Length: 239
DNA sequence: TACGTCACGGTTGAC
DNA sequence: GTGTCAACCGTGACG
Image (tube, rainbow, N blue to C red; front, side, top):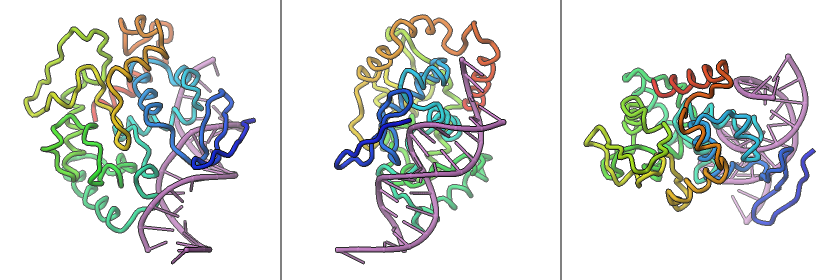
């Protein structure tokens, strides 16, 4: 059973079965969420991610599912958003749904793309375009999926910093990439430096990363699971 | 063993 | 200023 303790200003904190500290009702820290997604993209199995990050596997599954569906690693609306849809955001959702019907993207896949992702404070860095050129409407979301479709390599691990990765499109602002940092980033907090992200992942994976770098999307020891994982990623990228 | 799903208790913020 | 409500959170159990 998890032990609970009250932390002033934070809420009811607890320790899960894996020994990880969490706050009930509050989303995981963004850097943890980002690590979950990045580890999954590196080919780490969800169960391993769960153990390494001390997050329940249900949470890992939920975050990854959301990420594959929406491309967003952020919590839906609690942090920095509203826990309840305002009329304004609801109307915005209607608009985005209409737009996605036009572009062939299922609205249901954007159940979490509201509030924050549609708000003016949206994390533009999550999208591979210049913030100055990204409209705060559904176009950005459509562009996001278009970006994934045309730039699947960006969701593959890039082990060697020395290998230049030229954006295939001149629409992409190079400043958004920050050398080796992932396109995934944090909205509400100061963006962690790329070195921090890289450092954290390397710390977590230690030498495991170097092994998996050779085959980032497949593990030879578990072919059936790899197929599922790869299919899921391909499905996500294909979106 | 790994994974998806669900109920539960809790937090948050609009109304 | 306060209470209600709905959406969302992560955990843990289940299959």
